[in-house]
Image 1 (cartoon, rainbow, N blue to C red):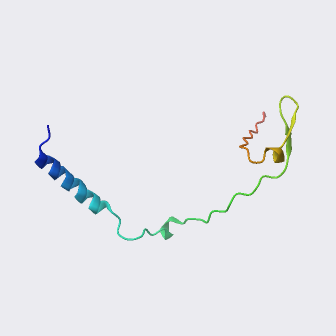
Image 2 (image 1 turned 180 degrees about the horizontal axis):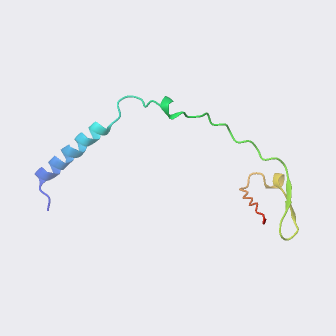
Image 3 (image 1 turned 60 degrees about the horizontal axis):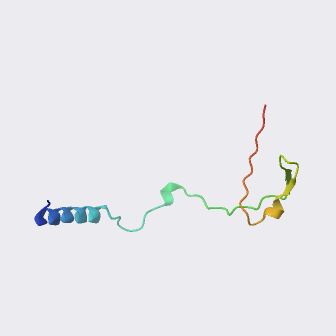
Amino acid sequence: MIRRGCVAVLGALLFSGLAVAAPAGSPYFGALDFQAYEPPKPAPAFNLPDLAGRTWNLADLRGKIVLIFFWTTW
C-alpha cells in the first residue's frame, strides 16, 4: 500500500518533469529542410483486361478505391 506522502512526492516529481520537458516557444522548422506538398494528380484514363477477359475502364471506377498491381517475369 502506498502512503499519501509518497503519492504527493511522486506527483510533484512528475509535474516538475513535465514542466521541464515543455518546449519554450515555437519550434524552428527551417533546419529540417521541409519541401512543399504538391497535391496528387489524377491518373490518366486507361483500360485494362482482367483474368476473365473483361475490360475495366478506370473512369467507371471513379469514387472507389482501386489497387493496381503490375508484375512481370524476366
